[in-house]
Length: 252
Image (cartoon, rainbow, N blue to C red; front, side):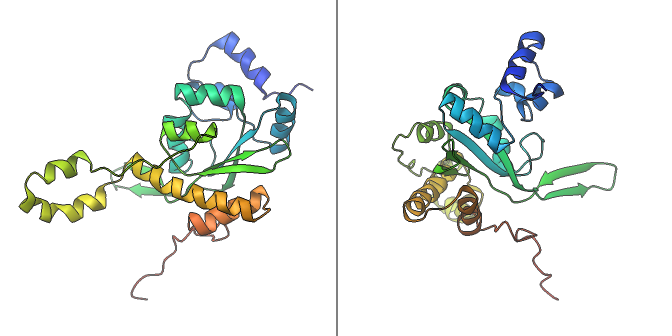
């Protein structure tokens, strides 16, 4: 029986229907909004390993909360879909040098805010994700935690040495320091809200260094490494049923 979801079937679909946004294209690719990157994702690791042996390529295995083929997967995986996978250099690298696979490690917590007037907002809470680089036998070669800039992600995938970006004040901070008296009042708030991609990159490169050290010390399987990363680095153990969100009421 023909595999109804495979790279060959995807190629045939694109020739027949083009690359416009479509639910069928998402289903074939295994990714929500697949038209933005046109990458094929295996969801069966054994099938990905067979393809890796056939093509002699490593596997890039995304581990995430939720599902890559649903809109509300964890926040980082949504950034991967928007910032990393469509990037021309990264896209070409993923297409030509890797076999792609994703696996949900657990559902992502989702909260619904009801405004009482018929309007509702659904958002994810907490969650993180990482990319494993595996050989065709499933052995871990590297693991890239969280979100980093497209340039750093590309360099990590190609094995280049990466230096963390230097911390630099945001434009809001720079503007605030022009008036130092006002800045003394504003600085705590500005520091609290300052959160940019370079900051994520610095944090996750530091975690990556800890992962490389662990890989040199321990002969962990992929699942053992993922469990350690979520528990000790992401601080959200996968066996915590509430991922730390069930804090008791302060006055109970």
